[in-house]
Image: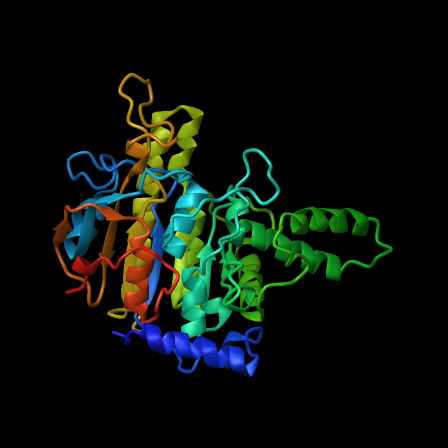
Length: 390
């Protein structure tokens, strides 16, 4: 396991960096050593899920998770999202609590209703990793669903010591569509009748990027990834997988082609239960479970990842538990059950077959990943999940 960077050494590094005036320079100019592992695959078992349908062996719709993976690692059965003022149990917030290790209040930056355009004020795991180690952006990946465009920009914080210079890259249909349109605009003459329409479509997509990186392509490695994706699946969108199956495909290809050190996969299909059909929820859980099987198989088949990768699986939030409703788990609006989640860790250095029943916090995930990867989550507030370490 990589050594932990002490807080004193970390702070000394920050002071030296500030003295040299390097705060805005590329991460590779700051990080001293190449990162060799363990790699981390962080899985958001998302869309809001209850413990009953996920980790309860007698009622689970995720048998691979509950029966196979739980036996290989440490299960924190009583993880919670704290009931604090302004703390919301929802997808974007839960993702940021996990990525930053803090319960912060988040408001849409434009004040619009039903939006989740949040900017973390504390560094994300991606930023911590890239500041501490020499890891290029394309090896820190956020894999995002097509219905969560507002979550595309959780790749960096607005913290003055971190920020965009340490951002991760994103794989999603939104990014592919934007890449495709840029390619089409570039090869279309301005006097072509279709040029104006293509340019307008591109402008609309780029306008969704509210964090002022519109018009900027992703890294060359990511652009090449999308070119290969296009050659394999074409441009129609009717051939490639959709929903959470798409996220698994993006992640498995990324493992093979981009070699990520830290990858977060934001599954979400269980949230389709908001349409009022119970099977949308249970089927969504099963799809994530199947995705976990593929991910684990891909890691174990790769000599560079096998025995050098830790999985961390945690929901974004829980889900309501109202037996008087036709669909008792349809929503996740800050009820008691919406605060009740869990976490599972497995891989090298993680205790096997352990179940922890003491209450722990979602924000402890960040510090625990920092311990695994050898960086100090200086601005996180959750303690390390010490029972996970063998």
